[in-house]
Image (cartoon, rainbow, N blue to C red; front, side):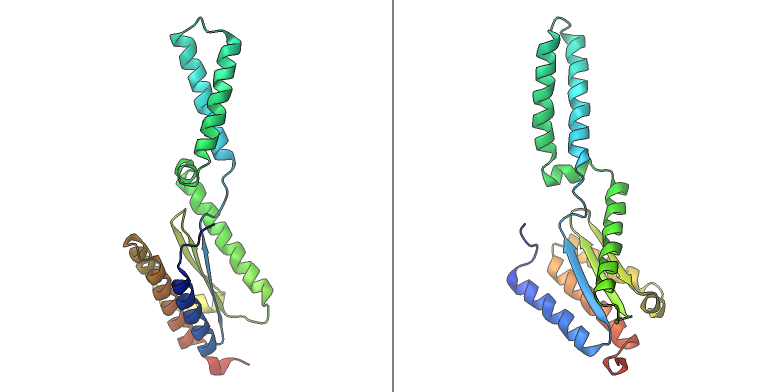
Length: 195
């Protein structure tokens, strides 16, 4: 799977995160994914509905078509549409928005928990989660860090990130969001507090 960032952008993002982790007593993690789920049932389900509808319309228009012929036509139609609908841009367009948002949110929280489990001695952490296919961004922080941030700070970071993405500057948006999260961590969890 092709990365959404160039090698130079990867290096800039990695350097920005490393600098924040050196200057704070917290972890800052970034997860960028193409899609938060495979959504495997949706291409088949939509193709099956279309194949059934084709059979119904064909029976009304041409009632003399043999049942076996109609079944073969429907099966081929089902196979072709399933393959077509499995192409990621189409697959994401046929999945309901609420389902995509829920799956992205679930993956964000699973990623946060996985990072917390991997380093249980670190109580302070922020995860910047970006799911490109769902156009979903979430910042997940530990309870203390979340409460210490100024009111509306997290929403402002997400809104500014989304503005950068809409302008076609994904890497710049990530760097700006990392810097904004880093600013919160530097204020509330500076490096000298680390034990």
